[in-house]
Length: 635
Image (cartoon, rainbow, N blue to C red):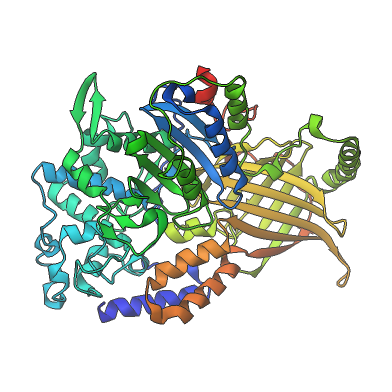
């Protein structure tokens, strides 16, 4: 890498380690994210599992096992067989109706665009990258960079040293990539680097004359019945390519089914070849060894293998579509997993539907009595954070009923004592403490205000909290205390996010009133838990104290691994820096604020200006128009 690039990276590392994360990027934050509008249909015909040759009991066991893996945090899962939707499960408050951040899943969509562009004669895998940028910056270009082809970018074998960290430190990503060196001769080694895919996106922009989204809309999105999705762009206005795409689970499933059908799709009643079949064969053959064992042992053109006969679109924290040609199946998954890539969800999926799983017939089979009803019950009961739900009254023992009744009486006084109270907050640790999870902030350069005041309003069913920033910025959240998440649109730094919010009120072991609020950012893998502890400081003889703790999922350990890999890559000589980053991350991702009570404030003041609730959401369903599960709707 050039000397200037090294200096920028050093400055970025220094800011990160002293927790000055909001000033890491050399370019200002500009809101990009548009509001998301829920979809109402999946776009697939529903069918019972038995009609497609799989017992409902197998599907039920699969969902039960996913639900039991609490570190995986599945959000939505759709299963297709023979092109039919045989099961769909949403872990409330998450839903298939909203787009979800795809992260590296985006790379596979770039690969499809490259295949289409090749078919149109716009480029070739053997083209030299520098042939598209002969003037930028020739005097300082390394000889190895001059050997990089589009094939090397597609297979992650370019060896380019300008990696994801460069996207934080550099405004002109094309310049940064081309001025950097290659760690080895291109084509000789696999080294995962999202900037390879960004350069493919940039080349596509150059040869087509339009954005990647504009290029794919008439060629891919519209034929598949998809609206043009949101795709984050770099500071120069080019789609990030290697990440930044948002898709709904049905859209993910459509891409998987398109791949299964070798690029063919029925458009207006006629079969049409959207992506060349030859390209799909090459892109998914996993001919590049990754050095990983198990599921993701091979890599093609921006596609990972899934064992030996399948392949996958794969994104960070559990976003994936698994395509299993031998079984004629597609499985679309969104999640908030603790693992970066191959997680327990992938392994469970392989155990039920992979190469070692039982054989399933292609034709219909007889359903066992009650199997459909049992599966439906499981699919309708999935919860992302069941600890925030209300315990089923009929399942409680007499002793448990008495306990909850006595606790309810104790909390009634707490609700009356807390309702209408306002607190001034003083930051005590962590560089940032905001409603937006730090992981989202770091990846998008969006660092909203740290609240300086918090005001609470409670009833038995709901809590409202108004957060105010130092400059008068406001953010209001509504969270259900009755076991039903509230769904709202929360705008932070000009970007709107759909959020599912649940709350719990309890007394801790010291009889302190504790309010826990879980904010599920429904379009991302992230959730954040706010723990509000109300207490008296006996040492200082102060009443009306508040301690506000922030904890997000995926937690500091998962985020630390992601950020340390982002900053240090695979460099074995940076182990000390990697460990220091992971240590610093805990303070960033688990900040806390202390507060002291101020005068009470009327409920009407400012409550309707910042939180917009979804219309018609009185029931447990988080979004209007939510459909029944496919298994329930067709049995």
